[in-house]
Length: 472
Image 1: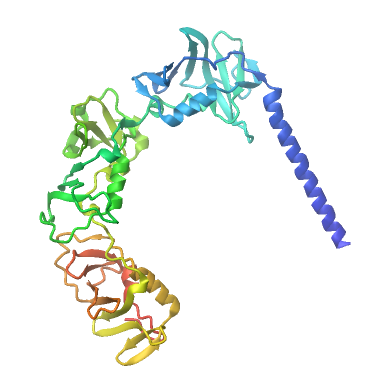
Image 2: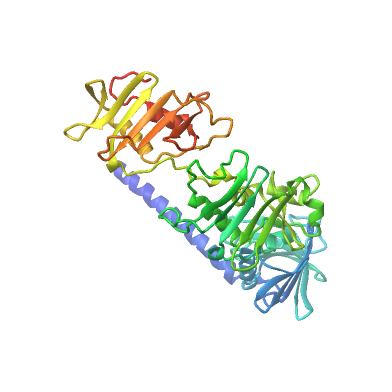
């Protein structure tokens, strides 16, 4: 009896799903078959003028496609251009009509109004004002009321899969191509960086390697705490260089500051710059004052730390977010690889750990199983903890490098010696200082630079993996 009940329940659910799916599908079919079309055909427009809260914008179709003619001559953002072309290639459907002089019943004009004028060959096809919208739970997206100039009726319009009303409410800055300067990444030969605390130059005259195939090197550097002779064994981080090049070739901005002069907005930020050299003339990007949301509310969405920027020799002023600027303008130490060491686990021969007066080591026994030793006694290891220890050990990463004030701190609290292959001397001697509030320790490998190691990593390296042993 119970089996028949379950069979009936499953059959009923299948029937409900089937009927619901049929109704949904037929609803979509009705959308594209039975709804009337908007009586004004804008598909062949060659000019669209939008007057809204953000001002006037004119888009024109010229040889090569849609472009912006006002408020400035500019190419369009690629995503916005594709979206516009898709909307204009589609039919505009009407699912509801009402008298335009009535302002109620769920439809009304918006304040401030947004007016859109579609034209072709200098003749107006239709001029309409956007009204309220509604998003339905179907694949046909937004319904938007259109109030057409000279028409007694208002039309609730939709374009399948596109929010046509929202499209024309995007301000001019959202339509503009934010690609400011075209730079060929492969043609960059050198870069000069100047910040408030340091200045340095990179070029491709170094020795290429597997981790630095482009041969980038530090040509010169000056600033507080920087050794001009690179005696700290500076190893450049190729990934950080790649990030910089990705951000400048081509160079994008986050918005444009039309109508503002560089002299008016350069502010106290002037002096930070990057100069890029290649096959053509050098390009210098200068960073100006911070964009204050109270003074420039149009840029509020860019967040704190956004700044005005300028290309030397050009009139335009643009704006970049703090995140973009941090990517383009690193500090000198940001270019140093954070890899302390890296080797294959198959090369690991043994590890010696000292914490204050206690000392023990890990090494494989005659059967190849790793054991822990303190004095002459061999003790089995926690296999799970050992796996985490080795994983951390073979690719040690620094958090950052020490400031000049930190470099003189004693590093006597602990030491980890790493032996590779069959060598009698350790390949790496990691010396660590005291824990700073349980957050980090200063450390140094061999005679390399002093760096900061998170306490979470130091704790794994200094933990006693031997079963039954007290932790140091």
